Image (cartoon, rainbow, N blue to C red; front, side, top):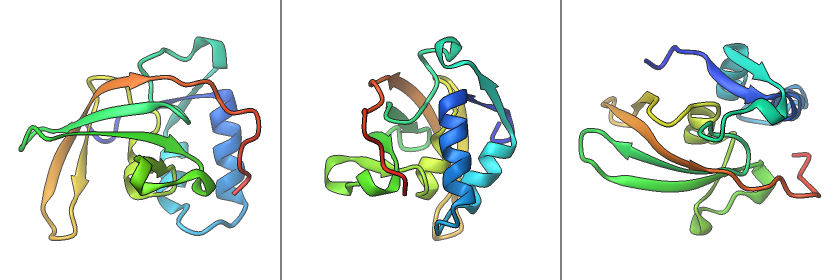
Length: 132
């Protein structure tokens, strides 16, 4: 199910497209996600869609381990605070997914695991956002 369309708000799509076009490093995965996105007006984005600044719970369907991360722009990333950059592989993979959707995630040892989004909570977008 990794090939299904993702859903993004107009604002997230515009900001993420600008990030990709800025020449920032590590944007290839994000660019691929943007190419398959369905874009909705900000107010019409369902609450269960992973968007920027949302906190996401996802489960490894093999081990049942649950992780929680908040999706942020690169300048706000902080592994110790579970803030993951949208340019990190897991960040690019999660953006635009909905609760119940899953992705097949390639591990460094060439094994693939399935991660399922099990919860999304939205946070208001900060007033001053990073441009990096």
